[in-house]
Image 1 (tube, rainbow, N blue to C red):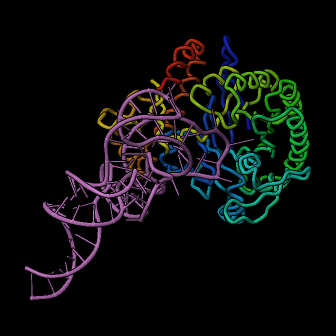
Image 2: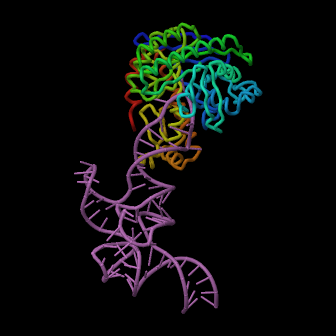
Image 3: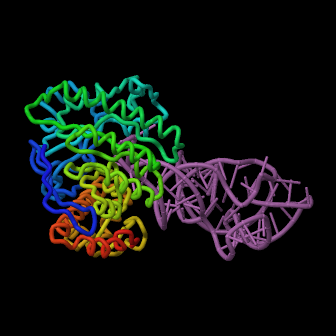
Length: 376
RNA sequence: GGGGAGAUACCAAAGUGGCCAACUGGGGCAGACUGUAACUCUGCUGGCGUACGCCUUCGUAGGUUCGAAUCCUGCUCUCCCCA
C-alpha cells in the first residue's frame, strides 16, 4: 500500500492524498460505506459503483466469521470474489463488537470470549486469530483487535484497557508479519489508538501506535456518546502525533459535520453506519441540512429529494413519494434513502478534497458547516 | 315475518358497579440512531394546563345507586341465523 499526499491545506491539518492498493486507488479524504455482513444493507454493488461512486467499503470480521464463515469465503477466493466487488475492502477486527455486544462477552489478557448473537454459541477472538480470519477474508486493510471503551469510562478502566489494547496490538502485528496473504494481493494492517477521553492516555497511545510503523493508523473509541467538542479535542491530540505521511482513519465517525471538522484535523478516512441506518429510518442528509422525511410537512411536497447534484438519485424521486415509501416500510424507501445518503457522504468528502487542492478548504468548511447541522 | 348478537376514542378490540380518561394492537404525530444483534427503538395520541389538576366522554333518552362504559327501561342503528 502507498500513501501519496497531493496537498496539505496550510490553514488547517487537512490533506488531499491518494492511497494505492492492489485493488485500486482511493482518493482521500474518503468515506467508506459500511457493509458489515458483506453487503452495504439494501445496496447493490453496482449502485455502489455507479450511483454512489464508493472507492472502498468496510466489512466486519465478527459477522463474516459467524456467517457465512471463513471456509465459504476462502472457497470463493476471498471476500472480493464472494461479493462481486473488485475495489478495496477494509475489515474491522471485531473489536467494536467487544463494545456493542458487551452483555455477551468476557475480556481477558488472552482475548475475548463471546456468544454469537445468532445462535448463542461460544467463540474466542484473539489478536492472532483475528488476523488469520482477515487473511481468509482477504481485506486490503485489516484492523487490529482492540477494546473500544464505553463512555463514560473511569480513568483506571481506560488505562488498563489501553494497556490491554497495546499488548494485543503487538501480538497482532507479530501475527501479521509472520503470516502472508492468501489471494495474491497485498494486505496491510492498521493499529488503533484508544485512551477514552483522557489526554495523557490518548497521547501515549498515539505514540505507542506510531512506534510500530504501520502503513496507516486508526483512531478508535470516539463518537461513543462523549460531547462532540471532546471528540475533536481527542482527535486533534492524536493527529498531532500520528505520522503525517501515513493515512489516518477515524473509526465510526460520523455526521457530515463530524467529517468536515475531522478532515480539518488531518483525518483521511471515515466510516459510519449513519448514512445507511439513519437513512432507513427516514433521515436524509443534504447540502442544506437534515431532513426527517417522515415529518408530516413533506407529505405533499412533490419537489425532488435533493436537486443539488450531490446525489444522482436525489432528483429522481419526490419527497412526498419517499415519505410514503418510508412510512409504508417499503424496501425501496430504505434503498433510495441509503443510496442518497451515501452519495451525499461521498460527494462531501470529494468536495472537501477539491477544496483542499485548490486552497479554499477553510473558507468552504466555515460556509457549509452551519448548513450541515441545519434541521429542515 | 320469527329468533339471536351487538353498538367503547381515528380504526380494531378489552373492560361488564368504585383501582377507568378507559388494557392492547394498528394508524397518526414527534424524537433517537456515529468501527450495524438495528426496515430498529422511545415518547405522545379526548379538551385545557409545564405541572398537582380541572372539564367533557363508552349509540341515544331516561332511571336505579353514595358512585354507571358496566345494572334497568324506551328509542335508534348494525350484524347473524331460520322462513
